[in-house]
Image (cartoon, rainbow, N blue to C red):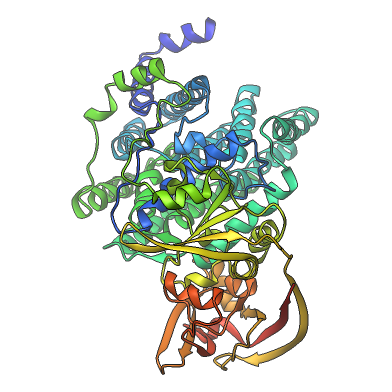
Length: 633
């Protein structure tokens, strides 16, 4: 009570309180859960990709599958706070999370205003973020949690209070189970703050060591409750992150995004460095920790936005940079110089210019105030209230549904919603969708699943890929298992496409890959594929390639193939995809091309050779390693 009285004695504190409350209120979602709507017939497979993995995460929880072994993804068992899918969930989990986020926003806004020596500048940063933030936060909740963590670490550096560490520990534990990449980066940030206070002796060492251990203890404790196998969860999550940087990059060329992002990075660096220079020069350790927090958080935001540089990801950089600036107090509590204030105004103007004027992205204001939809959603919530998958026009042919019945079924490459909308007994492979099985570890998880009696009885199969990748080499080793242990029992038309139904053979025999030989080849040399031979290809980055991969994304590689009709095809691949392996001397360009692999009487288009072609050879060593395996049963 004394704390509250002291707050309201000061008029500035009173004003700051109401501004912070209003800002936090604006950022409460105006929706309670996501409505899962049926897919419509559209002749396009790509529209099913994101909604499929989103709802599949709820499905694997309902099936009580284990995270890390039965399912591998960057999202974890608390992904519902990003997907907002309420299927099978408890409404109070959403409510408690939203209250936690509100409390963090309020505390951040209030403390930032209270500490600031330039309250107008701080207020403008606060307003800028509240205005540009979208109504639908989705996966950005993981970015916001990282920003909150930075804020609580920063205030604990000045004053290591128990409440500040409570928020840090809660955020780390949540982030680890919401989205692994955010949980991973949270630990070095957290330990940087702990180490600083340990050496500065602002808090007793025993307390700091206890704080350092608590998130680890909580994660181990909650892993049992949340059905997480910690070591495989960590390993598969790390593989997902590495593979994403290796092959999922997309140079979207959003107009002026590169120019404005580099300008923002340069201007924020100037302000940060100048403000840190006003510290006591003897506090070099503190300056270093602050720079680590600032640099890491902005770098992570930049990488998350510009590796997959499509519209949504690029927008995130401009939307959430003001929040990071607000959380890094050193950006705005010391800038007394007039030119720094001018630079700050320019920094705040650029996101508006880019988003509202150049991208014509709506800046929502009115939509952030009514919360009647949220309250209504809370009151009417059930475990299936957001599920609207039936009735729908996405029905598979009756003959196909009758053959599958209630037996287990999987789908390739990614259309999981197709199975759920048809009420089929979906039996997922660990990496749920083909495009993301992009490292050897992840590919082997799926191969082991399909190379065992645990493989589903039926598979609905289409040949489709993303980003101009050769679709048949997404999960190439799994494709070996499908060709050898499944029968093609039907090809049917669906949504303007050819789709195939495979059924597991009764005389199922595990696949064996027996190593034949290993040798080196020069880049750009032809590799002539042999029947029933599987090739693992090792390609090695030069030092410049490794540096480029760290600060941007992996250098691009192309896979060239020449077919027997004389045509040359070129596809995008990656270092890690090549390590997963390639095989087959037939060209699989579309679903019906598979017929020749299941029926030896059908003569398919042959491949004369493959060539590995880096876009820039300076990023790679001039030799590659080829390991050949004989495919047997």
